[in-house]
Amino acid sequence: MTDDDFVPPSPRGAGGVSLSAGVAWGLVALLIGCTLLISACALMVFNVILFRGGIAGIPRELAQIGGLVAVIGVAAFGVLAVVFGFRGWNAASRSGEPTAFGVAGTLAAVVGFVGWAIAGIDLLAILGLFR
Image 1: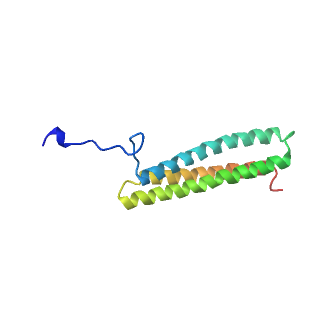
Image 2 (image 1 turned 30 degrees about the horizontal axis):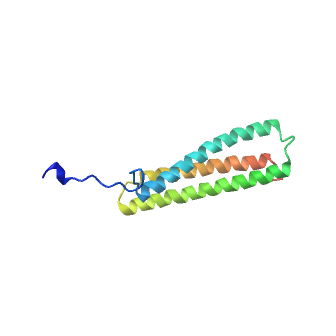
Image 3 (image 1 turned 180 degrees about the vertical axis):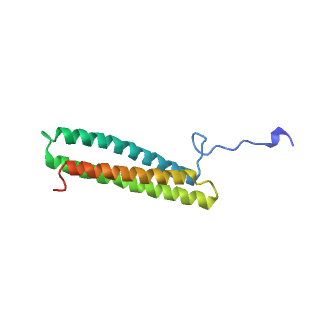
């Protein structure tokens, strides 16, 4: 057997990198979950500033509608991230691959979703939506 008998694998895709379904779905869930967690922290800082400064000069109805749409829209991404994490976990376990990305993505998505829900409900309470 010589070195000529070994052929390098052909790249699948433009960049030559190919991810399995389990890794890809888990990575997507991990990225969305971490983004949700960081944005929840930023929203809590905004909430504190808004609470201390008040909403003087801001149209209340418009702020309530915008806040509600934003909180629900981003929460929907959080739910999708949890689904993506479970999908990656399932795909990796079915193909016999390690489930690390699926598990990490699911956990990050759940924590990010919970953090965003807390910050979003706080924002809606500050805007007076629950009165």
